[in-house]
Length: 288
Picture 1 (cartoon, helix red, strand yellow):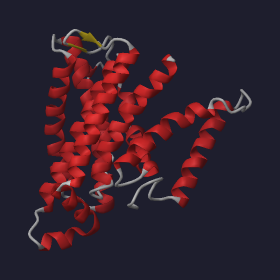
Picture 2 (picture 1 turned 90 degrees about the vertical axis):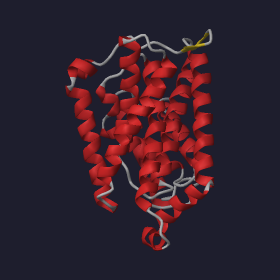
Picture 3 (picture 1 turned 180 degrees about the horizontal axis):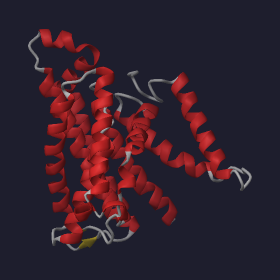
Picture 4 (picture 1 turned 60 degrees about the vertical axis):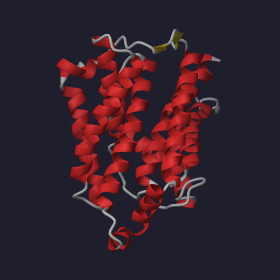
């Protein structure tokens, strides 16, 4: 049972990350690879505050959102100078810069040694130290994230984002300042990723830079491409699929000498086939 609860917590955290990134890639058409950086900043903010100050978890989440909002605002301004493939490359470079900060600012982040002893949340006498209670907490955050994201995409603001994705120049003709719309959704998405980072840090009770490397950004992108671009339900489905698939493959009877390698091969083949025959994802409506 504890194993299933553990998978459930990981699923909810990655579903939050998928929903938030889908707002940028799926609904706005901006291929961003900086999401692991914002995820990591949220995690490190909570980890540092919980281990070095008397601030509680929920206040650390709020402060993490504010800090990530500031950082993402500055990064968004830089990325606004790029478009298309150059936007993706620029975001990749910025992710690597932030990862290097996590790795080398040892007086603050402890570098590759990581930060230990991160506490679990407590609110109004309710203790979330057990994994079951923590799963309930992450589910509540997932529901809140989904509702906020759904409100955004169904609003007039969301309709502008979709138009930017389809033809940015056309909507500029009608006087829309698309720069501000793209910057706003970039910051909102990053703030949601910060929440996921705070939850991850408090759940694992230990973080180090390896959890927020470039491959983590690619994994989050894979979640939304697989589940469905421009479909919030697809983000949830993609997270569920990619969290459960490696675990299901553990029960396939591969020889013990090559079991780990074969699981990775099967995992990769399934992803390739899905990308070939369902490039918009399982339930998506947009192709990159």
